[in-house]
Amino acid sequence: MIRDPKDLKRYEPAERANHWVVGISFILLALSGLAFFHPAFYPLTQLFGGPVWTRILHPYLGVLMALSFAALSFRFWHLNKMTPADKAWLGRVGEMVSGDDHNMPEQGKYNGGQKVLFWALIGCMSLIAVSGLLIWRAWFGFDITLVRLGAVVHAAAAAVMIGLIMVHVYAAIWVKGTIRAMWYGTVTRAWAKQHHRGWYRQVTGK
Amino acid sequence: MALQSLDIKQRSATTTPSTQVRQTIEIAKLIDVSACIGCKACQVACSEWNDIRDEVGNCHGVYDNPMDLTAKSWTVMRFTEVEQNDKLEWLIRKDGCMHCADPGCLKACPAPGAIVQYSNGIVDFHQENCIGCGYCVTGCPFNVPRISKEDSKAYKCSLCSDRVAVNQAPACVKACPTGAIQFGSKGDMKDYAAKRVADLQERGYAQAGLYDPQGVGGTHVMYVLHHADKPDLYAGLPANPSISPLVALWKGFAKPLATLALAGVALGSLFHYVTKGPNEVSKETEDEIEREDREKEDAR
Ligand code: HEM
Ligand code: SF4
Ligand code: SF4
Image 1 (cartoon, rainbow over the protein chains, first blue to last red):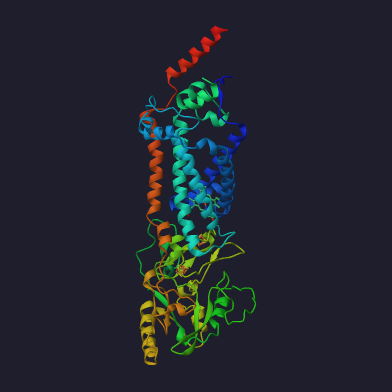
Image 2 (cartoon, rainbow over the protein chains, first blue to last red; image 1 turned 180 degrees about the horizontal axis):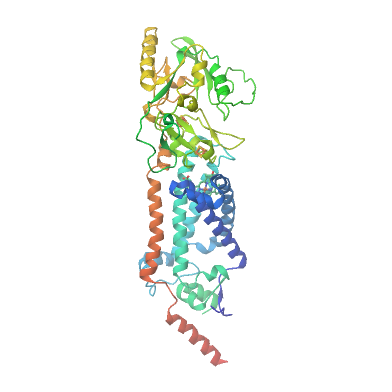
């Protein structure tokens, strides 16, 4: 695809870099975490230099992700406040999913679904980070009931988060012209007009 | 297993059955708390036979030494002073792994084959498969496993599985000078315990009894207690131990379901794409933008 100088800037280089740090650490965390989640996934430990290395590395990757995720969420926090238009959009999400987005209410930089995802991810990440520290035996020795609770919460919140990210990644693949926003930070004007008309008006003044 | 006497009945993080065909005899160790004099010969024998030498610690002003189980002290004597029936009683309990029939450690362990249960009932840690995550500590209702600071592997009493495999009693049993530790088939140990309990009851301990907690399916280390109604007196021996509901939830049916749900999301996405097609920018919108561009060009 030839890049057009009239393309609209959606993300700054620092935002993209931050997102990729979060994305890479998440994939490594999901693969290493799943290895302990169920025996069916144990062979994934081979990707990290064996089972002991997987156990050692996972929590440090977790700290990296928690910090970079916190930075990313501060960057996007104010853009994800819910509005009545978002609620209207969510009420008709069925039409969107079935492939007909012609009558969807006008959306700003993010649509209602993206905002719900944003807040759900913040909830999951907070639970995962706190519970991850509770079960990190190499450094901590919390009360046994807290550790047991941590184990349940960590596994449950991680499973939910992996599911949410699968939806997030699929949405980016499904909506053509989206992934380039994370590569070089721009989208075409037609893409913006169709998917985020409010934002399109705001940045083009039309 | 090379040794028939060590047939593996259950193996951590393994979803297919282990050897089920042969049934070896179920063994048990019986600790008669009422006959223990607290000499710690068993602690020494354990250290000798298993070639583990814990650090020489400090005196804490009590008889307990070391103060707790460690990766190198697989059994410790716990001393408690209590008042029962207006008399001071000095209770001494030999603490260590109970070799549960339903072991929480094995259930929690994520590493295949790091924890095994032999068909004779012994629960054994195979350190070469251990990854040092400490889940066994989280799963154990008796607070037994310890992670070594030297090699980050989990250790605990093996019930001298190497000795039992060749028809020898555990080292502690051999060393006990009063016969407070007995070893044999689980059935024989229960019979022996029944005699000791009857004797204690005759001598004024009306609540004497056997500690073989059913919450964990029974154990292969059992106690004869003078106050079987109050196990808690013996340095916090749990009255009704069982695998914590949190651990059962964590390791239960939810995980296979979550795995299926995730597979569903992945497959659902794939089939959404192939049935609905990609969500592309419509020709209409593209034309609109082009028209605007052309109009702007013309205006110049
Ligand atoms: C601050 C962040 C995190 C910390 C401190 C952390 C820590 C831990 C620790 C200590 C374990 C036990 C295994 C080990 O010792 O390596 C674990 C397991 C696990 N982690 Fe994390 N983690 C973090 C983030 C994440 C994230 C973001 C995910 C999501 C993909 C995740 C998924 C898992 C899973 C699925 C398990 C296995 C749970 C089970 O055994 O049921 N973790 N984590
Ligand atoms: S006492 Fe703890 S370590 Fe021993 S078998 Fe039972 S659960 Fe496992
Ligand atoms: S520390 Fe070792 S034995 Fe204990 S649960 Fe983890 S892998 Fe299993």
